[in-house]
Length: 337
Image 1 (tube, rainbow, N blue to C red):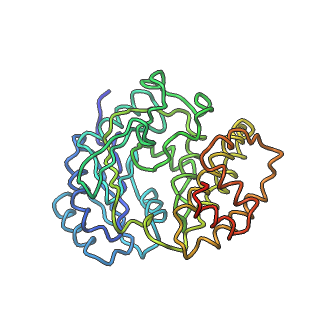
Image 2: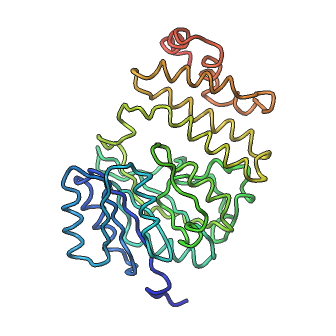
Image 3: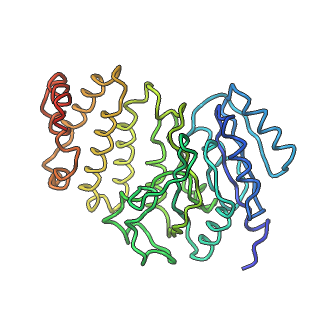
């Protein structure tokens, strides 16, 4: 198949907020892609550093760059704006503190076209900001090591891997989407929340007529970034509870819910309970009682608790369900979990 700009323009959406330290590396990795037919959509989300100056500098050098500035509304709003204004036939996301290998766009596009899928997914390097080294762990969430070789070089749907549904990496990046599929789906990132990738990916996964995977590691996800929102205390500590409610509502719209409900219970509790282990002490007590109410509202008679009981977070679950906050704190101090 001959690839032309007219039929195969790829929109690379880059949400940008106060990332001047990393932005040049990110943009350099995009403008030097082996695949040339790009629309590079830079959404400046109210940056107060010199990020906008850097974007404008690059726009003067490369006419494929489109710049849109808005007041600070958050990552989800920036990505949504990028989707709305993009004009490409295909869409991929790159976070502005990350960078990509020179052939990432080409590989994902070829994969998507070869297997005629709505979404193409690839594996990811972790780039450690402290050591300035790439690292890969075969058991990593990003490596998709659980995905059998029989699922490579083919298209599949969620029904084919229903038992591993919640193993899928949910990040918006390291994927390519057919633009018509994404835009017509009506799926957007929930604004004002973090962990926003979860409901966005799962609903698209359920709607997709086909997904394909390439396990080459072509996206570099920067970790141990000092000013990352994930490392800061904020009033977003309870967002995981809201996100899990959104996912539950999404699943209930599809016929797969009865097959997924027990696995979703585990997924839901693992993620909300892990959050309390990292929440800032300022918010821990409040989050404890929010989680307790959330757990007590779950009708456990409707679920099979066996799988949950085999997870490392089960003791925390039992404590939050049954104890007062001071008892939970004592057990935590005594390293009961």
